[in-house]
Every structure is written in structure tokens, then in C-alpha cells.
Image (cartoon, rainbow, N blue to C red; front, side, top):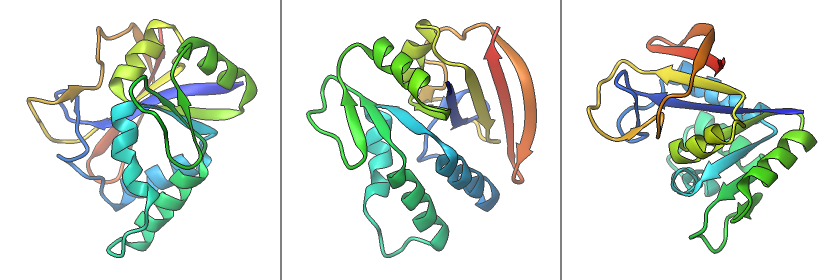
Length: 176
């Protein structure tokens, strides 16, 4: 049975914004390995549109960026959206019955399934489907943006902490 994990980079004041801060080389390596090891990812529409950047090679990319793109392209993706009409390669559009789709994925797959997008994570939290939350804190304060928790913070229990790279602290929680 697969484990559903919601984890994202965020500011100290709890906002996620990929334009405001970038991972250092150690954290980027962490994300490459994380994506490579996933059983798949479930995306909300907005986060999927951000990540589509990795669908096409760019001449200015480093070897590490090419490695991340290859890992991202290989993994199966499920995109939850009522407004999209189609999705890219190795992706499946989920328009209805989110709970049934996610329960089926958790039962059928082995390993970790990443949840990407705070709004989607809120829906899955409300359904009691997220098994683990990983908060990657960066030493920045944004004072604006999309909060990591799109709704009230669920009751959580801290199970692990670690440092990744020079500046990032990861806190790992499970539902309490």
C-alpha cells in the first residue's frame, strides 16, 4: 500500500512560492532523488501548470536540471482539475470522484505518492487521505502568497526533523 505525502518548500511564515526562493545544490539533489523514487504524484491544476516547465528540454539547463526533468517525466502523474481538458505525457486527468481515485492508487501502488498543491492537499486532508506532511522551511519571510495549509492546520504529530543543505530544515509530521 502506498503512502500519500504532502511536502513543499515554504517560507518561515508559511507561504509556498517557487518564484521567491530556489533550492541550493544539496536540496536540489534531494528533490531529484525524491522524485526519482516516487510511485507517482498527484497534482492540483495550478501546481501541475508550474511543473509543466520540466516537460521540454531547455538549452540553458545544467546537468542536474536535466536529471530532474528526466525523473519528473518518468513518473506517473494524476492531475486533479475540472477546468483542464487535457494533460501532458505520462499524466492522467482526474475530473471526478477524487476520493475513489486516490484510495485506488494507495491500494494499488507501493511506495510514496507525492501530493503537490496546497488546495489539493486541503481536499485530501479533509478526506483523511494524507499519511505524512513534510514542511521544508527556508530562511525567508514572504508576508504574502499561497499558504502551505490552505485551510485550518490539521492536528499533527512531529515524527522527524532534519537539515537539508545549508539553510533548509525539514519537519515531518503525521496526522495526530
